[in-house]
Length: 118
Image: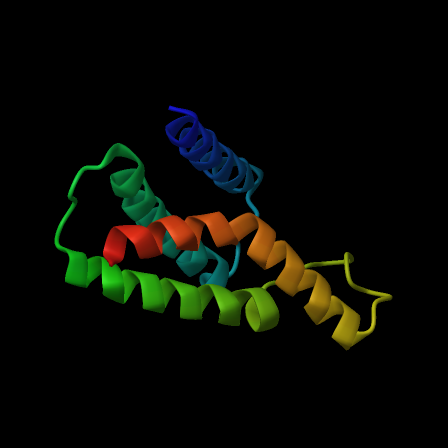
C-alpha cells in the first residue's frame, strides 16, 4: 500500500513540475522539447509499472529505458540551459551537483522503468 502511494506521489510530482515548466514556457529549444517528449514516454512506462498494467511489450520498454537514460544524461550534462544557476560555479562542481540532483530526482524513475522493462 505504502509503496504504491510513494510511486503515485512521485509520478504526480514529476508531472506537476513538467506541466509547470510547460505553462511557464521553459521548453523553448528543440532539445528541451525533445526532453519533454521523452519524459512523457518514460512516465507512461512508470505508470505501467505502478499500476501493474502491461503497456506494449517489454522489449519496447527495454529500448526506452536505455535510450531515455542515455538522452537524460546527455541532456542534463551538456545540452540543458541552466541560466544563471551555475554562472559562478567551476565545471567540476557543476557536474557533481548535476549528478547528485539527477540521481535523487530521476533515480526512482529509472529504477521503476528498469523494473518494468526487465
